[in-house]
Image (cartoon, rainbow, N blue to C red; front, side, top):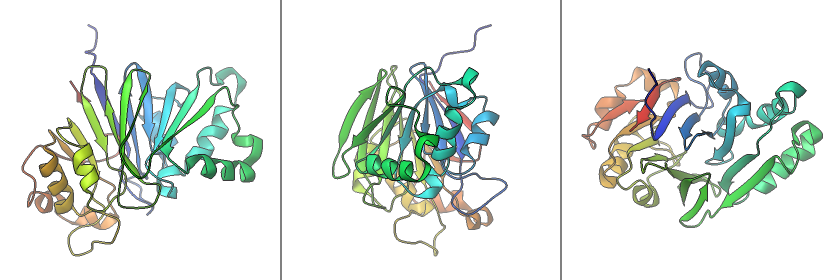
Amino acid sequence: MNEPVHDITVTVLGSGTCVPSLERSSCSVLVETGGRKWLIDSGAGTLRRLLEAGTTIFELSHLLYSHLHPDHTADLVPLLFATKYPDELARNQPLTIVAGRGFADFFDRLKRVYGNWIDIGRDLLKIVEMDVHGRDRVRLAGVAIDTAPTEHTPQSIAFRLTGPGGRSLVYSGDTDYSEQLVDLAHQADLLICESALPEGLKVSGHLTPALAGEIAARAGVHRLMLTHFYPVCDQTDIEAECRRTYNGPLILARDLLRIALD
């Protein structure tokens, strides 16, 4: 029997932060839609989790980066380095990177350090930069990608991916409370939202479960997934804190969790 075809399938590759953890890799999500595989962020541990999810780096067609912090980009260099070798597995399809304006300069600086080790060739690597001051949109491989700036760093953006069947996924990246994110996530089928620290430990540039729930409730999302948990969150009733502001379907991310959007 053939397996059902889903408009969008999401696999959490990393639900943690910069703090090393045996249970949670740094931030990363694999999205399958439009017959392609898209990677959103690639923090440390992503490449191993990708293999555990049954996908190789050569199957990825697009990389999306929410911002430039190491816990979101650390596996970019090893990914590109591995892409060059061995020859019998060499990439035969272009790889497109989508990120906020400033990423091309960031990548040029990486090449000054690593040189040819991460240079896979202009024919195989394309960089698309999105506006970091307002809403932006690009359509790639039949998938609509909408972005909006968030409250974290000057390069930070959130992504909304709309598959060929009309289902939509929003990925917040790191952010403080953001009206732009509320607008971007309006009626999304799934909002993957950072919830770094519990109430009482909030820091600037990050959300608590209740604030993430407020964004989800105001946006009217169909499902909310909380992610980007610092270790203290695993000793906290994150769901109860989120329920103060959000009453809809709620998922707490864990590495290798897989969800289909029909």
